[in-house]
Amino acid sequence: MNRDRSIGIAGAGSIGCFVGGMLAAAGRRVTLLARPRLIQEIAAGLRVSSFDGSEQTVSADRLTLSDDPSILHDVQTVLVTVKSADTREMAELVARHAPSDAVVVSLQNGVGNLPVLRDGLPGRKVLGGMVPFNVVALGDGRFHRSTSGDIVIAQDDAGTAAGLSVPGLAISSTANIDGVQWGKLIVNLNNALNALSDIPLRQQLAQRGWRRLLADQMAEGIVAVHAEGIVPVSPTPLPSGWMPPLLRLPDSLFGMLLGRTMKIDPEARSSMWEDLQRGRRTEIDYLQGVIAAIADRRGLDASLSRRVIALIRGAEADGKGSPGLTPEQIRAG
Image 1 (cartoon, one colour):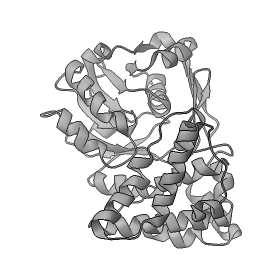
Image 2 (cartoon, helix red, strand yellow; image 1 turned 90 degrees about the horizontal axis):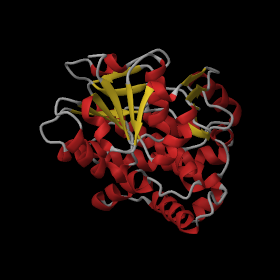
Image 3 (cartoon, helix red, strand yellow; image 1 turned 60 degrees about the horizontal axis):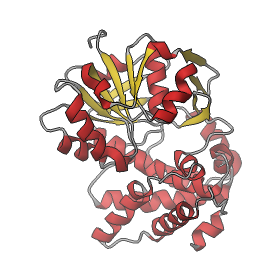
């Protein structure tokens, strides 16, 4: 990878700012295409911190910052980090402004972004990716990684994953990015449950009632994914099929298991919770919505997914943030 050319973050939000900040802290040239509000926020410096206690600050003069997509004109790699609903628009901007030889990598939730990017960027190299960890925007230009896990992107002959990997931000490659993305979607079904709960992830997962609800939601998703002939690859050390029964374990046993497989900050919450708090549209259509769509095609039951979709849409319409529901209230719809 040519270190003289920049790495572009296309649509820098929480994930994009954290990834861009870690790359810049390691000495890489980074270009952030972001909204004016965010550019103003990080004008005093981009702070990236992690659950392991590490923290670094990148001065704004070490970054190329703009809301003008023409700043992508000399990038070697484009990391797409926008919400799924904005993927098509971002593909059009990349097509107009980024060099034709730039590698485009999707670091987005969901499983439908890659086809959209490839459709909008014909003839270009477009790679799928998966970000397993949460990033919380804490304000004042600080972006905090609150859970563990390493980024995975599709394997290619140029070794893009290895070229992007830096200390504190390990990036590996896989020959089965489709399976990895579907595995992440199954885990991400908890995004909406956490958003509806209004409690931190670690506190949520410590309660058996919430874990049983998540287990049922994941089981419903796994049945749908298998009906499509897809074998999901778990983003955690535990296979996707093991997760529902393990989630139903008593609190003490599950607590020991969680501590060995995943690190979660006490105040970590899902990105969908943050969307509700900030009055933004969520990605529910690209998570539970995907499971419901498969169920429609295959004649499967997706009643839990449909209840969660309705509750999230209701919370979006109310504009009051998380409704703070219980597992029982979610099950009742």
